[in-house]
Every structure is written in structure tokens, then in C-alpha cells.
Length: 115
Length: 110
Image (cartoon, rainbow over all chains, first blue to last red; front, side, top):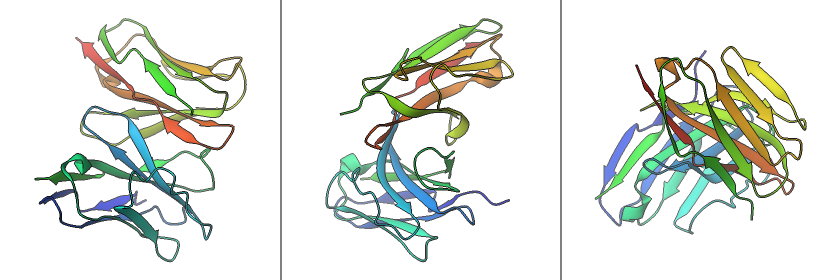
């Protein structure tokens, strides 16, 4: 079946611009996660959505970052006034149930480059 | 706060040899997961451990959760070139915070 889909796969933008990254989770998965991975580094947790519950935003690095999930499915991560340190691969994952004790299925990520 | 550390950061292995990579947490974990990320790919879930002292095997891979639920290990026997990649552990602490380690990058020499 279809896996987690992310778009765009690559995004190059100028410093100061806003960007939107999209994630389509696996159909039927209720949990959705966003992570950031800098070159050669581990995964930095950003935000977690579970069903209709309030999202866990504890990992968002600044108020320039926001995310929403519409209809319990597609999610958009928005970065406003991008900075060069925002350059990274942004990974989305989904899982069939709630919490961090479920296997997470990752998309291929969006590689974001800020010039 | 919780810290999940992985050692070594890099592991160079001769094909056919065994090696072990370790994951250590500063706090007790309710679960630990292991993922593998091939070069240029995305992380793929391998396994989850939840019980103290639990040991699980997947072919040549053996995963262990420590008795105190603060550390875990991944042991690979008879390493193959297909084992190349970065292995990440990730765990959930008692406050529900989930954190990935920085990973162990494995390079296999034929």
C-alpha cells in the first residue's frame, strides 16, 4: 500500500521567505509526527498530532515554526521568515495508534535549503 | 531532561565480523525502538522493546533492553554489506517525552 508521502522532495528558498511542507500519512493512521534531521545528525522531534487531541508542540524550536493537521489526515509544517539554520531534511512519520510506543513509518522527507 | 546517547558514533566493520552498538539513557525508559536509515533513505522501524531484560532476535540482529531499562544494545553477527547505514535508538521516558539518539553510522568493508 501507499506509504507516507511528503512534498516537495526538495525546496530551495531565500532567507526570510516562508515555506510550507506537506505530509500525507498512511491512510488510517491516527498519529502524525514531524522531525528535523540536520546533515549527519539524529532526528529532532518537532511536533506530534494524535486524532483530535491538542498537538504536542514541545519540540518546535521557535515561534516561526507552526503546523496543522486538517481533517485528521494531511499535515502542513510552515516555517516563517526562514533562516539559514533552518536548512535540514524535514521528516514526517505516521503510526496507527496513539503515543510513542507505536512503530513510526517515515516518508522520504523534504530537503530544505535556505540560501 | 532526558538524554539518549549512542556509542560508538561510527563503526567500521570488516564483512563477516560481529559488532555491537549501544544506546544509553539518563532516565528510565518505558520503551525503546530501533530504526535503520540507509544512506539517502529514511528511517525504517526495526523493533521495539518494552520489558526489562527483554531480548529479541531478527535473523543476524539481536536487540536487548537492560534490566534497569536505561540502556539497550544491538548486536549484529556476520556483518554483510547490506547492513550499511545508520542505526538509531529512540525511547520514551516516564514523562512521555520521546527522543532519538544521534545514531551509529555503520560502514562495512568487503
